Length: 119
Image (cartoon, rainbow, N blue to C red):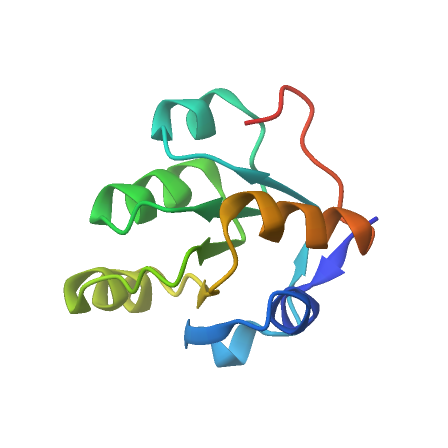
């Protein structure tokens, strides 16, 4: 089951750091990873990526993999240069206080499924 980004925001009680104009975009699946090589090895097209990493590498990997939205977990706010990169890529980025485990579970319980070859 797919989900709109505003639903992801609401389920995770997340703050939108960039991408208010993409809240009606659809994500098809979800996954959590802190190893970006895991993201690249999975079919991540139009997925939501949950991660505790707050580096530019996350956004570069997300762009290459075709990720539809990045959610930073555990309340870890990315530095300004990371948010600026999200703006330049026009990639929606959210911030939630939930842990990676809890955030994944909340999305799953609301119908969003993982990827084949999951992260």
